[in-house]
Length: 500
Image 1 (cartoon, rainbow, N blue to C red):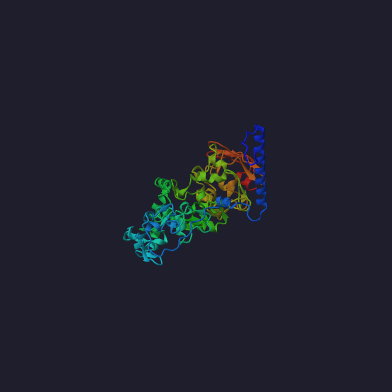
Image 2: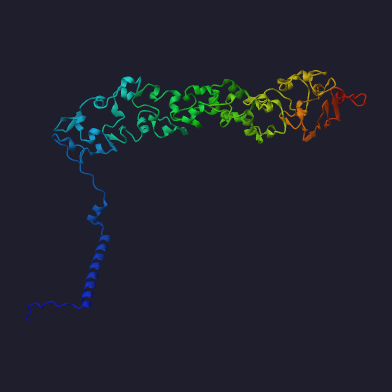
């Protein structure tokens, strides 16, 4: 066989064939590894151009050159020209159907300039008829024909095509935000829903409100409307506009009230304002926190004076436990007034704490409406017992003999006069009586504080009188029809004993 002859190929053994493929693959992998290493160390480009194109965001279509002749309207809102006029969730009808010539007209084909088919509001009212004559109050942009100040003619977030993401954002373009630095914002204002209360074009109400006075508020506050329809005593302020007390946009006070509660209420209630401001003894529940609405309902209720509950119950919301006054004194709990086993003083029995206390503030200790002696021993004068004489006849302590005037007498001898009416060491009413409630009839105490000692009284009532054996004098008995004759018994009279 000559050298130029080609020998026919013979099948390779299987192992030889496998080795050949392995060597080929190894060479290929070595080449790829070398290429990658070279690419990683090359400062020119570590990512092939083709890979870069795959990773990069698609480039925006190139802006077409300005046409020098008229073009079909269908080409206006296409890529490279005015495609952005259709980039809205809701597109205006003419724009959607490429009806650009509904609003625009060609002015100069060579310069590709356009003008409007109509001027001012006519651009919009050519299609959108708005009868402004039926609006006594008109929005200023509507009056001036400035529809495009609020509306985008191409599209928008809603079918109204208003500018801005919310109505609130649109209104803020002209109107200063009513929120300011206020802590509390009315729901519609916080949501930017100005059109919940205001009309956009015009209306019959001042400030473009959708309804008049309370009717506007009741559109949302239906529960309040139903409640006020049932109360016996509506607050007079509620008969006016709600904005007399509430700010419809924002406030620094809860419930959107215009002022702090005490200032707001006393802006109308002059008598209470005077009591609060001039009071020597302040009632903190009236001046702090919710102030007046701690006790009164602001809109209306079924109790006189707009009380939230029966007066005694309202008072016991605080006075069921000891309370501390601003000057550090502790007012004890008054739970005896709720104890059904005790005999109640008349005002307490009637649930009327204000029979003795001025709840808004007082010139007297304990918020009492008139003076009442605090000390156990007291030089007598009518003025010092003015509180008691509001209800009780002052002759009770002015008359030495008192048939029918009091049951506390020995025959005709008036024992109230004997105890109280003294120029130096008269016993005050509190020496024997509890002004709120007592286990005994006539509110007689079991004991009375005397310094640090609870001095017993040991009073016992009988059908014709009674007796006591207190820590302040010897036991004495009194009897109305058959007076005890202490002179015959060789004992000092009650008056003589008490004079010591």
